[in-house]
Image (tube, rainbow, N blue to C red; front, side, top):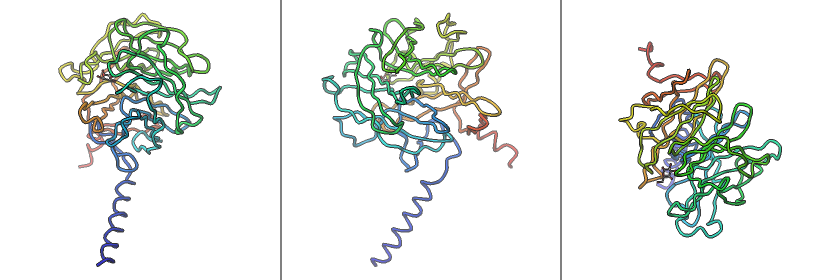
Length: 335
Ligand code: GAL
């Protein structure tokens, strides 16, 4: 009997390994997204950087059963944007300098400084009523090591809630931050990335989840309205220079869909040998079951000053060629 059980158990483990090792070839917006261990990816309000051939995705770790005395930032690595390996929680932080109970850590973004060889993480840090409105910085020598908290402050003296990260084609890093009630600000970082140095622009629009991409000579910025965890129609504006002038804001999706239930968090440009895909990354928040919050990633229709998120559907990307395809388009002709 014992032997039978052992055999059954080993078969199950083998089977589970096969399932978990299975390669993802499709991005499925709004569905559970298993990492290499089969767990739903916990990288909410995230940010992605590419180092060599590897993409690192950092985000809010909101798994069930975490110690509520700490706040966590997770890190995942991938070479194809579809299969993600969990590298662990790179931040496990206790209350920095007496923020008080239920303090908040959201929207972590990591920048790599080539000169200092340091990985510098910016995050929105706040007290439970969102009145502190600061950024915090943590630093590490590795992209996936434990980051060490350094300090918290208001960038350039301004309130800062949702933050976004933008790295221009020449490598210049920018922090995008929401300064209520003025709008969202774009600012450069100091040479060591340990400070927010100079304001480049204040876009006088009341927006959260700010993100920017530079595509074919134009800057596109997107953001959501201020409705907390509830989705709303996200919008975009364009400018020839980051300092503006910025165009008026327009819808990125049919407004009645409230951005298909998602809130912007980043625009990721994937340049390949045959083309460029710009991906819209959004969070579909589930405030009462945050661990189950989903992601909408969709390749954008973008160019000539227009930006549009098509209806979310399964799709695939080839990071080498930069091409993307909807799965339904791939299936055509196979019947
Ligand atoms: C959203 C924001 C999230 C979180 C939430 C709290 O608007 O983008 O990061 O702060 O509000 O209500």
